[in-house]
Amino acid sequence: MKVDRQSFLLAAAALAASCGPSPGAPPTTVAIPPQPSAAPAETSEWSPPPKPPAPVAEDSSRRFPNNLRAPADEGLASPVDEGLAVDAGGMCRAKNVKRPVAAACSDDVGKPGDCKKANCSLQFVCTQCEAYKKYFKPRVAERAVACIVGQTRNQARDGCRTYQCGDEALGGACLDAAADVPCRAIAKSCKTSLDECRGLLSGMNAAGRAKMSACAAQGCSYGLWSCVESL
Image (tube, rainbow, N blue to C red):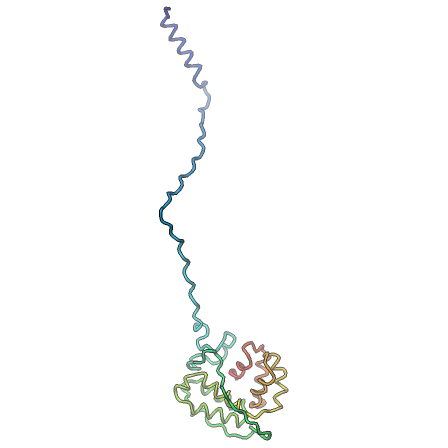
């Protein structure tokens, strides 16, 4: 069959035109779906996650340098004035004090010594000594002052020992039934027993008992002994 060359070319051009995009039509965009990311390569060895840093324990000495006072007691003697407290429990109490049992016992007569003879290089020692003279009955104050004045330098630097001198003097005081009147209110505020309150207030004069009552009325959150420390 003989094919005309010119007719073949025209037919081929017409066929190509029919298969291509129409004039003016926008190009066709082919959307390619997102491909999943490659999975991380598996390792042959397993490593545990890093441990969180261990918590740093708070240094309580930064808050209570003398281990005796809480923030509410900031108005009391400073840690430097109190020396170096060695009582780990923070309660400077005397132990094994024997109280007199005589019915006719009295602490109304006594001659407290001179607090200036104590180691006053630590102001707290002499300040507390003067407080004992002011708020304790004469005979009780006499024993407390003698104890403070008789301290060695190392004992004076121990704030607890000065407090213990007062506690020993109060512990050896004659029981006074008149102390029950303020102690009924104090025992409730300080959540303590009437016996404990009586044991401390029996050796105090009227000014000392009034001071203790005022301390207890403020809440007494650190116990009755803290009120003695704040005299």
